[in-house]
Length: 431
Image 1: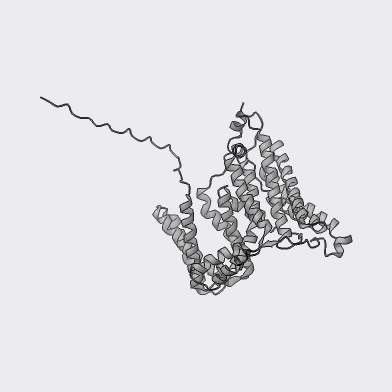
Image 2: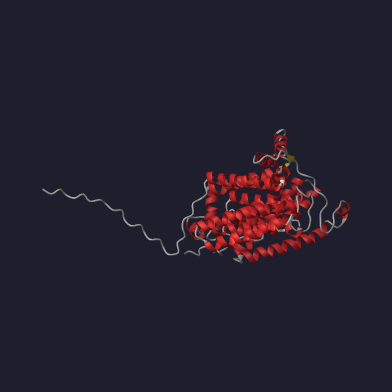
């Protein structure tokens, strides 16, 4: 008597991957982000102890970094709104320039609060002009943005000569390149907590003092406008990723033809996004004219609109990553403004460690050429660090821009821009 053989089912073979298909990248979880932040803080604290550069994480350094990060972050948030709707906004620098002039012009005559509103309004005008040219007439987005930058610079220079070089403005300190002073916007300091954290930071303990310095900088002499900017980041995330309006707006940047087929008014959403983008950029310019300097000054933006775009790209077109990028650029800018070459010299050691870690990671991923290049650059920077005591002043002034290039080069492989970003769109083109 034979017993029937038991057959086991074999799973079907896995479907072959399409040629050229990219592996799916997992999103960073909150736990991983916190782990990365903790590792960066430990590394920064170790560099501070080894080099004696105690200003790296002092309360004053963090407070200054926060103030310098706000206009960059607002410019980046402006770019995020526009590009999520499919409109590239290279004109952020020009819209920030318009915001500085509007805040300086109206602010000295009335109040800083009305100056802020004027800065936002001037930025909105620049955004609407960009929307008309790109969305309605279909002009190339880059060409339009560059033209707005040049136009804003020329218009504000002319208006400054008209309004600030005569009459009452001239007697109160105005001239063709700057406005009379604008009243200051109040700061916020948490009593008790600020002094306690600052005292703890001054003890220079490993990690504890660094954490106290960072937290102390966040609760000491913080402008009301800085608090409002943080709320704008949270509100933008909620509006764009948690509401139906945000879903429709983002669909315009991913596939406007499909969005139109579902009843979305693509033109209206693009106009709204670019107008908001201009207003946010104008607010960033108004911040420069009312918080750190209290005047409109020609050339005041200093390329922050472009750095804001870099922060947006570093953040992968998301508010959280954008905020981290703006904070990094603000930190590097504050470092070179407050401390000069000696503290920036300490960062060379930090850069060496980061490049070594990058080389190890690339070697693990079998990217031999990139690993070797990172190791060679790390060795050269280490030699530079060991043979010098400070960094030349010319390089110190270029620190924020060098950081911008390094960050973009290291983060370029994980970026994903909206699919229809920068593309011309015409109503009914899918039919």
